[in-house]
Structures are given as C-alpha cells and as structure tokens.
Image (cartoon, rainbow, N blue to C red; front, side, top):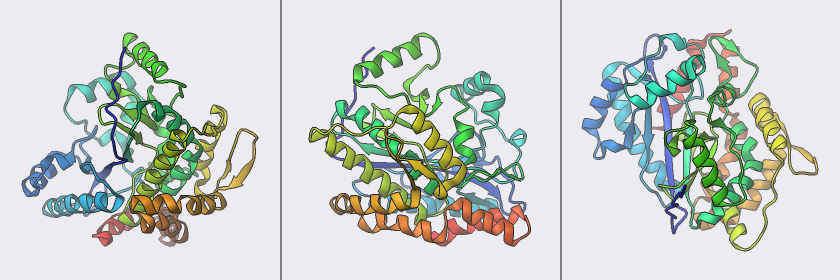
Length: 375
C-alpha cells in the first residue's frame, strides 16, 4: 500500500495532554467527561481543543499547530483555564499523572463509539485495565525519507523522556516499585509499545499493509507505538511520556522532544548516519527507566557503554542549547534541570505518601494542586 506523508515545511509542534477527572471530595475518578465537555465547550472559542478519550474519566486538551514551545504552552493554558472552571461547577478537579493511585478499573465507564468498543472487545482484560494517561507531542518533519531514521535515533533517548516524565508509581493502592507503571501497562496492548524500525518508507508501507490485510488494525491510527509517524499531520509523534501534572514539567519535556527531533533531523539532512541502539538495548533501557526513573543507568551505544542517566542528561542539555536557541525555547529546555532538582512526579508522589503515612488521597491532592498552582 502507499502511505502519503504530508510533510511539514517547518518543525512545528502539536501537544496532546491527557488528564483524569477526580471528585473534589473523595478524590476517586469521576465518569463525567460528557458533562464536563458540555460546560467547557460553551466557554471555548474553539471546542475542538477538547477531546474525548477511551474512558469517561478522561479529557484530552490539544493545541493547534504551534511554531514554538511557548506558543504551545499558551495555547494549552487558555484551554485548560476554561476546563478547570467547568470542573469547578461540577465538583471535579483535573489530575495529571500516568496512573491514579487507588481507583478501581472495574468502576470505569467506556466512552460510546465503535472504535472504543472494538478495542475493548479485542483486548479484553488488558484493555479494561488501561487506567493510564500520557502526553503526546507531534513535531513537524520536512522530509518523509528522514522520518524513520530520526525515529530510530530518538530511541536512544527513550529512557530520558520516560524517566523525566514518570508519574505512575502507585497502582490499585500499592506502590509498584516502578517509577512508571504506565509504560509497562500500555505495552500490553497488541499494537502498542516500542516501534519496529525500518530502513526505508517502503518497508513501513509493507508493514502497514500486512497489519491491515491480516486485521491487526483497521486504520493507521491503531498503530499505538511509543514513537510513530503521523502521515496525515506530517509529523513524528512522541508518545513516550507519562501524564504530567504542571506546566513546570510539561514545557521542559516538550522542549526536549522538540530539540531532539529537530537536531536529529538536521544531522540526517546533512548526510550523517545516526548512531542507533540494538533493539535489545532499547527494550532494556525502557525497562530500566520505568523501574528506576532518573536514577537509572542507561545503555548508551551498541558497544555496551553505560552511564547514570542524570550525568548523560547534563551533557545532552549542553549539546542541545544551540538547537533550543534556534527554536526559541532555551528557557524551557533549561527547565529539565528543574525537574531533576525538585524531583520527578513519581518521586514527589512518593514523598507525599511517606509524609502522610500512606494517605493516597493526599497524593491525589498534591498532584491536583500542582496543576492549579500553574494556573
């Protein structure tokens, strides 16, 4: 089959931010997305900035096509302010994390629609378990034939993004011991998880044809990889990150994703063959980041060199500074250091749990407050 990639002449950004709905009193999840949408959309100039998701306990806030990280954050902030006010009317708060610490999956309701019904019908128990939230970032790509090399190169930095955003340590009332339980939950779906890598676009087209012919997918959007081409939008979509609780975390993560994609694309355009990791190292790095977060030791190259992630991040940020200057996001990229200084979300949640002797309602309170403080 032929897949047309509608290339973007500029490295534009689009951000999709999934947030859970929690009751203001109990702090459990609320299946009231339809009521929230009705109130929020009446306040918005563009109702298309708010989307439904698989479950009725979720709202997704999206940007338009943005030239810079700053513009994207302003876009999200305008929409979020209206959604928060709509939630206030209903006694609902927004919760930004990869998982909820104590909600029961069996109490959640499915959003109406054939697409969602088919997903659950096929995936059964694992699909119904998907009480998870994330952030997706699209970066415009100017040349179809550079998309897959950039995707393969980005996998080296998979653990950095996973660890910095990790926000899902507690599941069903139990600390899992993982920084990101979401990462390992999501990959249980049959088309989710780490992407396959291909040398040419034709190989990707052949793969997609196989998936459609054998009924694995009904549409390209059902390829739910952590990194995937988005041919319709002309972007490379980064879906690695856990849900995020504040702009203080979100802006640096979006800046890092933007800079990495643009830097790698420029290197490919200049004729460089990007260094890539063997798939077994990519898989191991994903697990290490999910398990240990920013304290992980990551495998850096095919020669099995390893390094503490925080040390590797320090050098990476210095290397990307000129890219951030060109893209207009030097301050946002520098904010990655702020995440490390105050602790990633999984670390902050665990601190609250420890200080309150395991009070998971207090954990939800803290995540909700981080979002409100940003407004």
